[in-house]
Image (cartoon, rainbow, N blue to C red; front, side, top):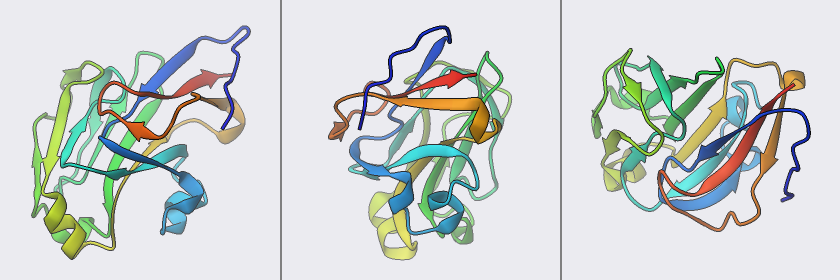
Amino acid sequence: MFKFYQEQHEANTIVSPSNGTFVALNEVPDPVFSEGLVGSGFAIIPSDGMIKAPVSGKIVTTSESKHLVGIKTEDNYVVLVHVGIGTAALAGQGFEYLITENQTVKKGEDLLRFDLDFIKQKAHSSLVVTTVTNIAKDKVVLGWTEDLTELVSGETPVVNVIIK
């Protein structure tokens, strides 16, 4: 990892949405994420079943299966938090939203709760994937923070988003 020193661009810090251990996006066992098809980002091996807002903004994406949340920031980029691989097929079982679409949330606010043991048994993976989804890769720079070992939900800075 490296620390990015910002020059003329404003940095927006994404904090960890989950307690757990950092995983590089290219290690996620789903090519949709590992190849960056839904944006640049990172993943977490969760240690519990609580997801907190990694950024402040407006809830713009939810699903009937309750396994993901999209937040649009004031700078108009969307951060998607996706819980598990193969969790859409669970049709909401094991998930509970603590927010509603169009609600404004602050960084660190509770978004959703999930049954980690259930997800580990029923899904392909329990990884929590966080991506910046609506900006072309050549228009965004992710500046990683230095210490990405154990992450604290809603607190640990993971990456600074620099819009070119």
